[in-house]
Amino acid sequence: MGVTEKYAPIRRHAIGVAAVAVLSLGAWGGVIVALQGGQGAADASRVQSDLSALIDSHGASGSAISCTHQQGNVWECAVTLNGQQQWATVTDDGHNIIEQGLQLP
Image (cartoon, rainbow, N blue to C red):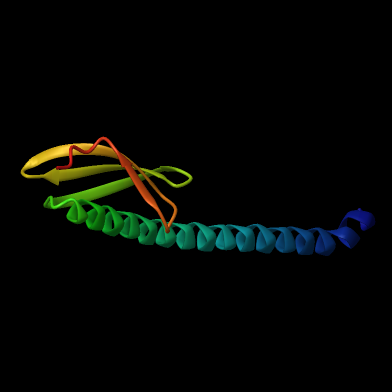
């Protein structure tokens, strides 16, 4: 019985330290996810802006551009051109943009 009482405070301390470590890791994970989510939204906005400029350069009028990230630099975008919705696969690395699928004039 004396041995158990001697190690009880050490065990409680170890459990407390482990709980703090787990909560800290969870908090850092949340921060990383939040930062990546913010970057994803900024990237989507950039791709939509780049695609809008590309459409304008062809003399077309695009509205309601919405892009969803696929992987890497590849995005799937829905674009309303002249009142009709079209889909495009867009590769945008921040310097060059390539779209496939839009019927531009």
